[in-house]
Image 1 (cartoon, rainbow, N blue to C red):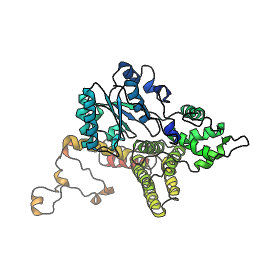
Image 2 (cartoon, rainbow, N blue to C red; image 1 turned 45 degrees about the horizontal axis):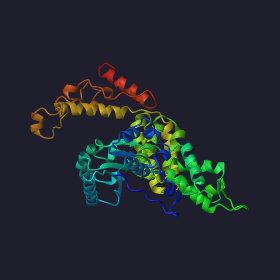
Image 3 (cartoon, one colour; image 1 turned 90 degrees about the horizontal axis):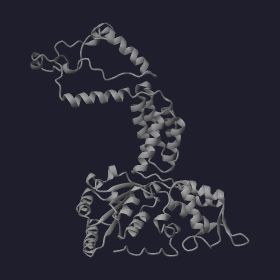
Image 4 (tube, helix red, strand yellow; image 1 turned 90 degrees about the vertical axis):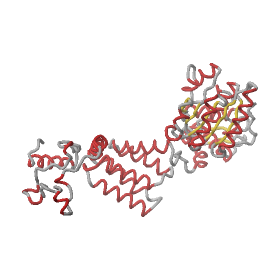
Length: 440
């Protein structure tokens, strides 16, 4: 059974809707999926469309691609949004798909924002995907490893869509200017090269954003003597005013940008750290979230190489909380630069991981008797505290005494780094170990 005819967008629909690709050949920027020999192309040529997960940022064409795949494969296309429907509506569509299959037809159930379904709702899809009643194509902007249950992941071919490159966006914009049926062709709109560059750069890989900005700029562009409305760079800038940066509050891109900030700090690159910090702040990220990440970084990656780093990071948090936004970026920038240029050590972080490994491997090892508390006479009779050496009663405050469980005597977890204050710690530890008669 062929797919239903795709409805034509209303002539007054937004330009981005009117310019959706009408064939797979018109899809831009996803050659890694649709090129010769690539997964989706091979599936289409084989005549069987697998269940898919289309994963990518907004405006990369997930919905359009799903519809075109259904059309090319001859499937009935049924779109649903996980934001608007629940299991009841999905079951109704599955029942219709089962009836359609009895008549020889196949159904592609497109579930937009599939990550909005909870575990029980995702579980409800499994038997119907497994039985082939539907071919499920989900769309998400979120990392499926975090948002989809493993059983559903294993039944879907995960296809990552990429943001459109600048050349692809420029092609799309020019196509919209030339298309007299669905685009702006024949309406007397022209676009200067500098305006195209600004528009493409601002869109940041989002086709919808590029076309929306083009349409809005064309509306306000003044008409010349010949009636032509020329969209200049100044017109685009005025229409744009304040660019809207894509940065989802709790999704994949959110964590990618945070990761870039932390890695720049760890790599001691203050310029890159400031760039990623600005990306987050200007996109509307919660400044206290950023401050919390700086506090964690100060302890994990600077550590005792510069003990002041943690105090400064906590002061940054307090300052951001006190002054709020928009001025909160000022202490955040100070903190980011300090942490990026501080000496680095993860010795304490790494030492804890080693100690944790022994805890998990050896379980609850008994506390040595000389370290046990002896608050009662019975405890003393049992040997608690017997043999404990009080360091302050001995020369230089150093005693030859073990503090680990017997099974772990001699273990070394903490190795101070060679930078900053940890160089002093290393010297101190070496002196103590010599005084205790240990092999330094």
